Image 1 (cartoon, helix red, strand yellow):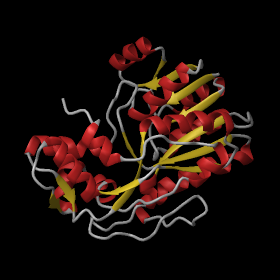
Image 2 (cartoon, one colour):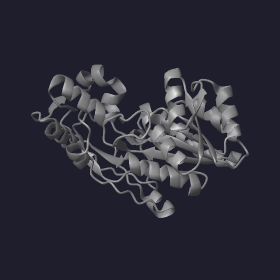
Image 3 (spheres, helix red, strand yellow):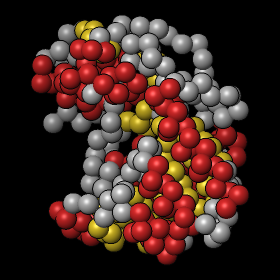
Image 4 (cartoon, helix red, strand yellow):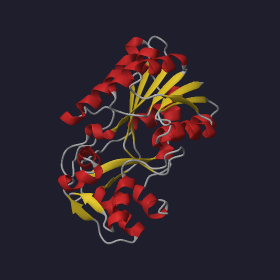
Length: 300
């Protein structure tokens, strides 16, 4: 197949693209940086110069592709609308990347939530995440317009990416801050828990969903969970630092950004990927984020 990927230079998109190329597909990847375009060519990806705001370009690429995978943004509604417009009536697959912070709460790292969501659990969505949830719903509803829309809702991803961008978006900022300051920081007491999943297992699920997922399918993506206190302690051991220390959301926001401090690091996001296992036969191989941090996480 010829597959168009947004975010092909990113962590998820680059890793998915590498798998698709290995499977024999042709990959065209949206890229806005000329230097990255040259690097994508060397990986075997055909670069498409543009941004998520180039609606006509996205619609044209989607119409010409056999499948589309959006890994660039979970929150850019205009880009999703443009891609769906290009696929309308074709029956082709559209894989949209969401994130499990969509059900994240606002507890500042100080509360462990008992709520665990799977695909059959009604979601509880904070006001700040309603726009993302609406995009997910739009993708699922595209089945009525003849698009095989599929949402993959990733939890915390760890591991080293296979494309141009090796780092994920949650653990590496914690590590970078710790290495710069000499102190591991977590938001609040860190009792909040996040489900997590290794990038290799994420990629395997994208490949299965591309081939086999039905229209309107929503999948959480996880294989285990850990608290931020446990993650912070593992980082401290890996770096040879003292115990993790607490930050409030207000203290963390200047370093990590308000949204990240509140939802990426300060919330609970506990999910179970039941449907991917039962419908697609997905069998993730990695199940310990703290083990990866302590034994496999690059530190050089």
